Amino acid sequence: MDRSKTKLPLCGSCLGFKVGGWERDSVPDCSLFSCRPVQGFCFPFLTPSGRRSYASEIDQIGSKAVLVTGCDSGFGFSLAKHLHSKGFIVFAGCLFKDQGQAGSQELDNMKSERMRTIQLNVCNSQEIEQAVEQMGASLKDPEKGLWGLVNNAGISTFGEVEFTSLETYKEVAEVNLWGTIRTTKAFLPLIRRAKGRVVNISSMMGRMGSPARSSYCITKFGVEAFSDCLRHEMHPQGVKICVVEPGNFIGATNLYTPERIKAIAEKMWKELPETVRKDYGRKYLDEQITKMESYCNSGSPDTSPVINSITHALTSSSPYTRYHPMDYYWWLRVQIMTHLPAAISDRIYIY
Ligand SMILES: NC(=O)c1ccc[n+]([C@@H]2O[C@H](COP(=O)([O-])OP(=O)(O)OC[C@H]3O[C@@H](n4cnc5c(N)ncnc54)[C@H](OP(=O)(O)O)[C@@H]3O)[C@@H](O)[C@H]2O)c1
Image (tube, rainbow, N blue to C red; front, top):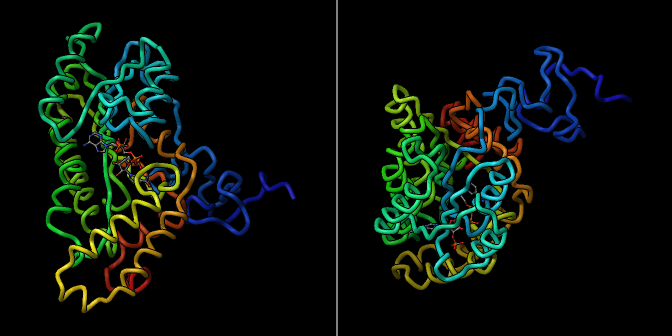
């Protein structure tokens, strides 16, 4: 059967899940809306994949500079290389450039004038100020500003509210939320000058809560709110603010490793108040560790939907406000959790 000519009443993109045995890349057109999900142009607000139309790209990428935070590994590292390959001048912020971490070294080893690694801890105001100065000085025409800022640096952890110390909440927020706000505020004057873009990496966990993820969720919900307010404020200035909400790509990045999950759990258990430890019991914690391990193992190993979404946000003349690079299972779950009454969605996914 020639599947490319098959018409379904509704395609996978419209329904938001994998149809029959068809893979995402080969889901046939739908007859109702005549949409082509493969090109990612089927009702963009319904299209869960990271595929986007590049019909109208911005001009002269070559003269434009972008800063990406958190480039030592994961999305940041791949994105820095990808944007460089598209012709951008890339400032790659690395947490441990000063300690010669492998990621920043590999970017330096590209020996390209357009790939410039900089020491940048988003929790350190002094390092941020230095980066603003250093970048401002090295821009060809500082008056034309900086085209893009990608707030990607982030950390994560897990644990029920009763298992999570206040210090842990603050630690995660310091990087994910205050780090994003601190960096954005520092670079906005340069971005405004270029009428450029701010792309904030949130998460599907910035749209829906999940058991044992509160310390991470609150930071990403904060990033979403910050981005919405900033988008409204920046509209008259010609600056566009986009949010990218990746699903589960943990297998492809360094956000969690099996060793890190175990270390987090052991530390949590050791620091738990005696009552909580007794009430929940060690068996409960072990079950949570297993759940977390299986969540991490089920992530997509291919980060290209995330990288393509960020690239679209930086290069399209009309970028989307929100991008949802995630598989169909998570896309549908986000839609149900955010659109249906909690009494229904909680019963489907939580209880
Ligand atoms: N992977 C996923 O499934 C997923 C899903 C949704 C959202 N996200 C978000 O995507 C972003 C990137 O994460 P990732 O998955 O690529 O994980 P990752 O591989 O751990 O990358 C995060 C990067 O941020 C850096 N970083 C941590 N603290 C920093 C700080 N204070 N200042 C500057 N950089 C810092 C890390 O440096 P070191 O490596 O040196 O620690 C690392 O290079 C995060 O915001 C994360 O929340 C990821």
